[in-house]
Each structure stands twice: as structure tokens, then as C-alpha cells.
Length: 173
Image 1 (cartoon, one colour):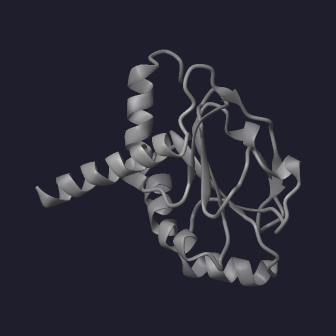
Image 2 (tube, helix red, strand yellow):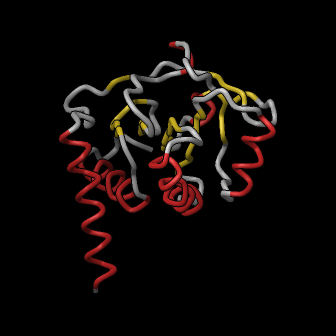
């Protein structure tokens, strides 16, 4: 019972922060511009590669304590989505690729880590990044439906998606 209450509280907290921060897009949704960034192995990833799935684009850095606390939640969401959703972690710092790869391996991250720069160009962002971590939730149709500055939880993201799909039947695949 306590676990259920805790999960409900986490989902409510995630949704209330989204609403308070103005993150929920009401009415018309914001179409995303595509971006292409390399991962730690040099493979290019474009946002459009993931059309048809929910995409959580998470801007983060290794020096950011809330970002580090959030990694296990992102991993739970990513691995539990069974192909319906993916997390793209966009690292926003000047760090040696080998050092970053070692860090990611130590954290057991299985979702793609993409490389931006400490001062990213407009082409590397899908919206403003006012603090770290910042996450954008992109619908399967390619529209930004939520933005969160600060930590997210796996349950909060999943609850948001379920509520969004219920409120917008037929709009998402």
C-alpha cells in the first residue's frame, strides 16, 4: 500500500511540476525540429529516427547532482517501455569521450548518450535548456507535449503518457 501511495505521489509531483513550470502544451502542440547528434561510438542519431515512439530527450551533465540522481529513473523508464518509448540522453559538457563512456558504463546506462557541447548550437536543442536536467517528451507523431526542468521519475513519465493517450485517443500511435 505504501508503495502504491508513493508511486501516486511521484506521478502527481511530476505532473504538478510540469503544470507549474508551464511545461504542458495546451491546445496546439509544438512541432519539433529535427536534430542529429553523435553517440559515444560516433553513430549519428536523429530525432526523426525514432518517429512512431515516445522520445524523452534528457539534457544532462556528469557534474550535475540532480542529473545523476535521475539516471536510475531514466533507465527504469527506458528498459520498461518495451519499444514503445526511448530515452535519448544528451550530454552537455566538455568532457573526454573515454571518460564519459567509462562514467556511463559505471552507471549501467543502456539508452543512447548523445554528445552536444557545453554551449550547444540551436541545431543541438529542441527547445530552451534553462537548467540541468531538462527533459522534453516528444510524442510518436513528433510533437513536444511536455517539458520538465528538474528531475523526472519513471512512474511520472509513464503516468503522463497514459493520461495523454487517454485524453488524445487516436492522436498518438
